[in-house]
Image (tube, rainbow, N blue to C red; front, top):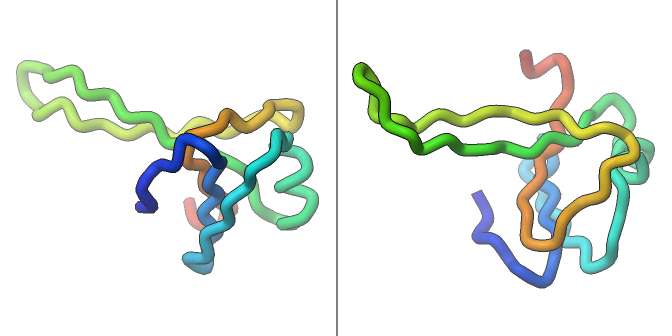
Length: 82
């Protein structure tokens, strides 16, 4: 995973390409230019439970009208991956 850059948005492509975007952009624009892929944000929950270490990752798919937040790391995923 790429180190976060607080001045840009990082989009990781399935082919291990990394794209840095320095402007506000919507998920729709990225999905249109990468047909067959969806934009996701990986969220980490670090709350420890009784039977686990608390390291859980959740995949949140973005809506078409969602705008990327500067300093976040986004991933392109396809349904073939699941």
